[in-house]
Image (cartoon, rainbow over the protein chains, first blue to last red):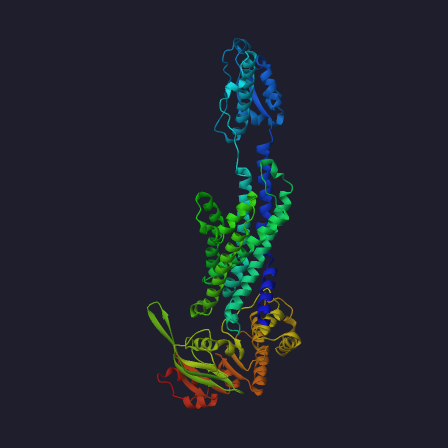
Length: 387
Length: 248
């Protein structure tokens, strides 16, 4: 116990005194909330607000009521544009032509052609075009209904089928995107935060010739590995918790319900996420130690370990493309946690059995990695690689 | 007491096999300073690494105070204070913390540990280094810290691989006096060096290793007589130069 305490204490001292590495590790935690805040903010703005649209209308004087209705929906005439926006909307160049015969054709009951001309391929224009089209359709429909009513026709005749849409996906796709980002970020934080400590305390110590000294001491390699693992995973856990706390703080400034998000980072969700992610922190650090202890140099360790970081980034994305997910994906590390987080963000109740199962599998693999590593450290190959 | 018996060890380098140790045997007795001499690549470091239990011998055995290095490496390491041929420091720790770390690994704790650490810093005349971080230490200062961590738990047996390289004259003298003190107390000291005067002055017995075998063994004077030379350096060159060596 004295030995293990000394090993652990030394690892912590070294890790926490390496300020620069620690700062880099915690960058993840600081970046996540900022990104999520900015992302949600722009998304909500795009989806919920109806920013003014400035349209160059020719023949506006022929259809004053249509123009009035446009105005109610914040679709304004180009002549009213403030100077700041002038250049932008001049470039976007949305044109509507109303024919001179508008009033006459309306009275005669003829179909009137209104022309909407703009660059449809411009992505930024998709929302304004949709709004203009909607408004014109509403206007036309309103007049059509009135015409039938006047003639004593039930307007329900125009709607033989009424489609009722029920969306079973609880959050809207945009909210899913945000929560997926957060999930991905949390997994990345688990893998990234402990990274520098894991490499430094294994490949780094080997390169600084202190590993051989340590291996000559009367201490079991298992204790050495467990001490290093504890330290690296502690930093990883701090990274994850910090990411969560800062994100919950920053998300508090955004009203996600506006875009249909039902999840909120309340105390329960945070606690569940931490329980879910702690085994992943240990798993990630064990994997990193495993690889970097066996690398021949610090540089080799860095490049191999950075491949491991792809794991948390790739697996959740890959999972999105599998429609019929096999059951065992629920159990494996990273994929299991990723799927459970998805449920959590959708506001579904937590399947605690699955949480236990995936945690158990993750911890078992971690223990196996630690055991194999401690045996490997006793092998001559590792010792010979020291010189 | 360190006993090395008929030690064989070969390494495979690609398709070739390199024989590092070829039946090396010797003893380092308690209360004596035993010097181990040999040209580069003679097998000294391989022998010492087998002694620490880092390498497994193909044949033969190493015993430290009766414990077999192959069977009980941890028990063997407990009996040893090691100054290895390659060493580094934890640069984010202070010298005190570094020595404290190794003392704790050897099971020391509480007041005894602190007293022992303070004593070793005093003995090696390096008290001013005690609370400085080891980053930026000179070679000599680094050597001293490594020596302190090897000696702090007052092991029964010392294995020092060229402990005086990079030390200034004063520090070398301090170390010599220190080793002499431990010798008087009955500790076993195995000491490798390339500095012949030092070996001649300090060692009670000298083992000369060449090509993984024992080339000669005896007091410095005996070795000089054996080779018919006045200086140990000349004797050493002569002894390792002969193919058969001088059977001891």
